[in-house]
Image (cartoon, rainbow, N blue to C red; front, side, top):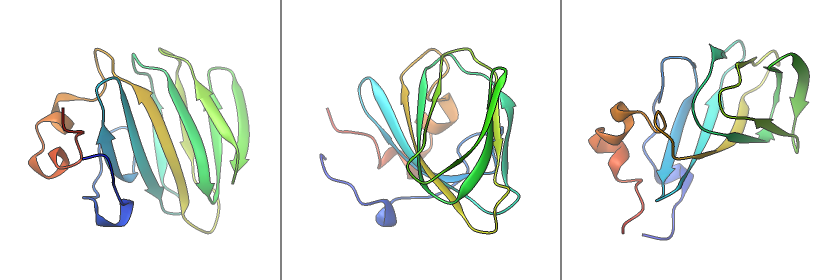
Length: 126
């Protein structure tokens, strides 16, 4: 299926390292997820074997990527190289919403996501 609508997709926490509620599309070489974080929600420090680009859609959050940190807002993009320790926290008063692009790697997406029947509806048909 080549067309998706975030509002019609299953939403749930995808990984233990984050408080995000998200929907995911899994392609052959890349994934795209839309994540929503309430005020105070965070992604605890973690790494993964894939590169990641985060596009901020709404809200504000504090990010740390490696040794660098910044408060990001609408229109900002965060680049996280593979294997780099990173985390963030929604320190604003509204939802923090972002799109996350990741390449497929040895640890992304996790087996738990691939085996989830509800999320499997979001896989691209081959």
